[in-house]
Length: 63
Image (tube, rainbow, N blue to C red; front, side, top):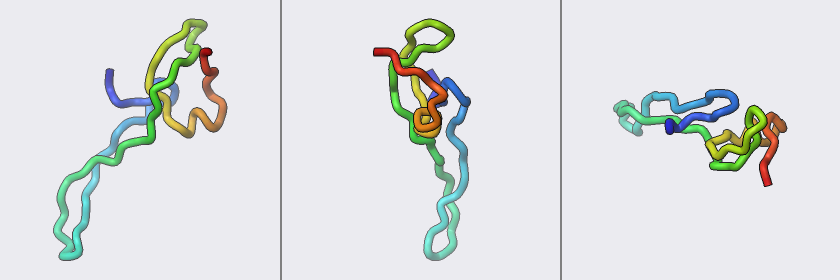
């Protein structure tokens, strides 16, 4: 399973870390994903959901 939101497909993006001497090295910007049990397409599933989808009620939590 990839590190991606199953609702909005938000995933990792890459960029540079810039040090004080302005030397650049590669890094990953990772989204804030939570592993939840949700109802997706009428079935209970477990997967990664980003916090912006949780806050905007794009998902329904399975209890």
